[in-house]
Figure 1 (cartoon, rainbow, N blue to C red):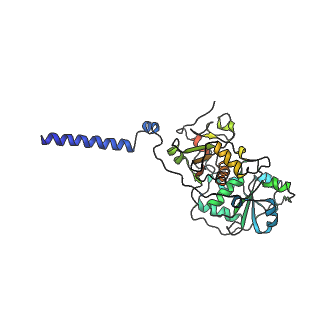
Figure 2 (cartoon, helix red, strand yellow):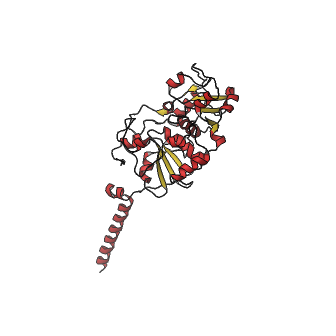
Length: 323
């Protein structure tokens, strides 16, 4: 009788152990069918206000000699005319362009030490105000740069509201002389957290209640009809909703007012408690929209820095199309 009991106990232990192993580490097919399987929450990040995020043309004119100005447009546009005293740093200046397109590293932010050297080379040391601008009708490069400045611990970096178009409209002078600043010492021990997320986090959490994946590309990109940046596959992330960045910009190429932005995001189903991952191709437009989200009162938001190009470049990751 004792031997029978011991045998039954051993069988029960094997069954329980096997069940525990299966529950903790399911086979790939089961794991896919039971998503999400490695959940984690998005912590609220820093909010923005009109005063913390923007400066006007009038303010910049009064403070020209006391700020570092960064033109984030492509070099050709900078050469054609820029705000006097502005240095040029396109989005690619801040990103790793050495990795293959379609990979998990292409177009992603430089590590802290490299980024610190590049920021310091622009004459930025976090003591002077930094004014960032683009043309307002592009990818929102100034918002991307603003996010990077925040991650580097520079709270006094702000966006010129309306960019160079507003500057010209209000009679600002234009220069075609290339300007450089003396490099200064600057260090970044570790990026300020809660601004970006990655492919692994999205893959682990996609589909969970309370998470919204926000695709801010054009409808044609979202639907998979065009691949303007030679992405490996056309389409969008599963469950993603489309809210083009252009919907957030007014006729003067400025962010729409706070209340209008808030209403647009609410219409898309977002609340201040919603966890939001915003993405585009390589993290530029998404970073700009991230700053708009923080400004409008949606702090549980992150930019997908690797972007759709990386997701589409991994054949093991599912995509959806609207065809």
